[in-house]
Length: 121
Image 1 (cartoon, rainbow, N blue to C red):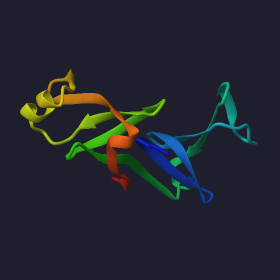
Image 2: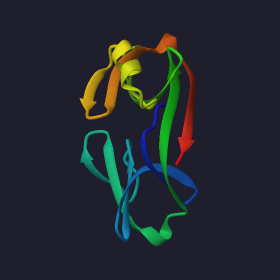
Image 3: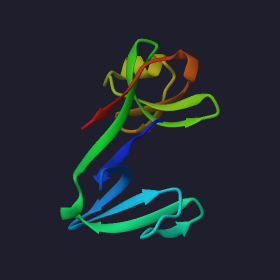
Image 4: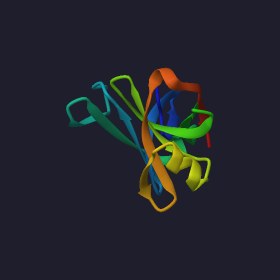
């Protein structure tokens, strides 16, 4: 599973999360008591931040063609990746898209990506 975002542990379970001041929104795909459906396959529960056991930001990182990347998404055998090496000539040589000033992204075939790991920030 490729994760990039907040994760909260509440009552011994991890949930994708969104902190908002003194509250944290927890998300899950299935209907469970206390969670409200906000759209099909997406349920939310708002809990006080004081009830959260742990709140961290999780990123999935990888190496592609010898360069460091963050994995943003996965689709049909491809990974949406963002270059973290900070060198424009490298990004240009890899034909990455300039997403924003100094931010370069591209699609990498899953089979070419190595060293995939999750990091808690």
